[in-house]
Length: 327
Ligand SMILES: NC(=O)c1ccc[n+]([C@@H]2O[C@H](COP(=O)([O-])OP(=O)(O)OC[C@H]3O[C@@H](n4cnc5c(N)ncnc54)[C@H](OP(=O)(O)O)[C@@H]3O)[C@@H](O)[C@H]2O)c1
Image (cartoon, rainbow, N blue to C red; front, top):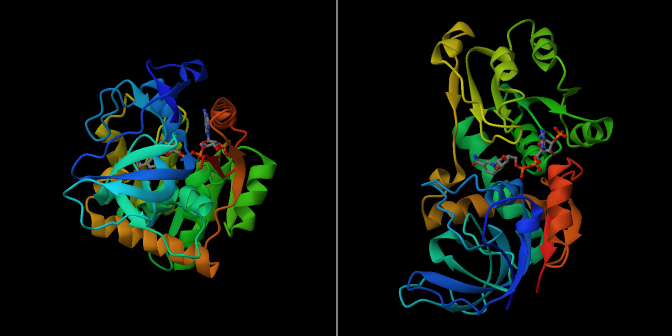
């Protein structure tokens, strides 16, 4: 079968087109014929080696890239009784979706409603479940609260805006261009701004108080500003490090900024069992089908054009979600 593999970490040049055997499922895995794979910034981090020493996400070389997809179950290991052949499914945080077939632990696989396309499911599973736990479990947002969403036109940012507005949360948002700001406003963000001076703008617009929760996927470029934009005893959810890692934060800074709470959560710890995976997926899929959530697909690539997809992400050209059409 065709696949995109990495045998060493690095730039787009380490993406290799490889013919490999169709993988055999282990006892607790299912074999899936992949229709679409999702493309995410996490794929870029994986390619660069950022998970080489991770125990949450133990990526080991050689690795077939891609950790989100949708397709049809073709077979299952002996211990699997939760899924059957021919079932339409989607999954995330299991590597190998940039390929014609993938083996995935059965506990990470969600069943799809008949009305949801593979394309939409592959675009929604990872960022949808991420935004879902960030809003409901990490941020614990409720009606009347306020938040700041950085990189608001990004894959996860766009969903965060919509889930927050659905709850009745006031949304402040940052982006890097007028075109991206236009997207964030269109999704319902109340106040959209550029990064420059964002903490001052947020404080001014909240009568000097700051917001209840900040969602920060950027890290180095924004985290200290995020502390300033948060209210006393508020929460910063630093869920990524797209702009670089923060390596020098003294906990005393949290005290000085107003007894703040800082968390660095991971999706894997919020998708711990099959029931949770299906519950989060069902919530996102239902919202897509009833029209209260939209995840526009703004880039469709193939196994022959993966490099372009990664370049669009790294050059900040990708607005929203991109997918790989495979099957
Ligand atoms: N902790 C978790 O559970 C979890 C789960 C899923 C993903 N993540 C992480 O969340 C982060 C965002 O993922 P995503 O897929 O939603 O990405 P994305 O938002 O679609 O893309 C990243 C965005 O970051 C902004 N950005 C700022 N500085 C950048 C830089 N130096 N290079 C590239 N982009 C930059 C860009 O928006 P502007 O141009 O508007 O700034 C860009 O659109 C990634 O680090 C990912 O690994 C974490």
